[in-house]
Length: 142
Image 1 (cartoon, rainbow, N blue to C red):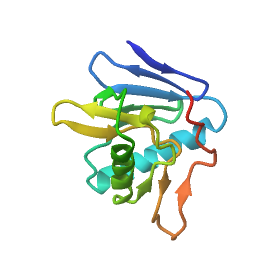
Image 2: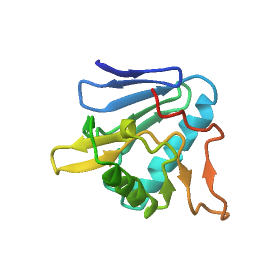
Image 3: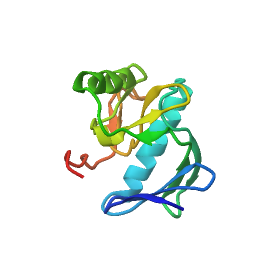
């Protein structure tokens, strides 16, 4: 399986079947794992079509499997970047790590997509207070 990300926070592979397999690790791994699952389920329920679909979750291994949302983006206009992350908010989610490293391009329909929701916040969760992982997102540099 090709490795596409190996950091202190996560190990990500693309499976031979095209799925994305992400294993959380490091400080706050369980909270980030649970938050990403919560956010992806919320977005799917709201019909958001420019994020991955959660296919599997293994709490014992802190691993999720999602659909693939295309290839990483190398260049994007700053205004377009803000539009994409802003569009996500119409689905009740603030990404909280709004950098190009979390944008992909899906060639099948020419759509920019967003990935990596471990630090995202539900804007209007049950109970009325914003809910997110307790860790803050990493800085812009990888």
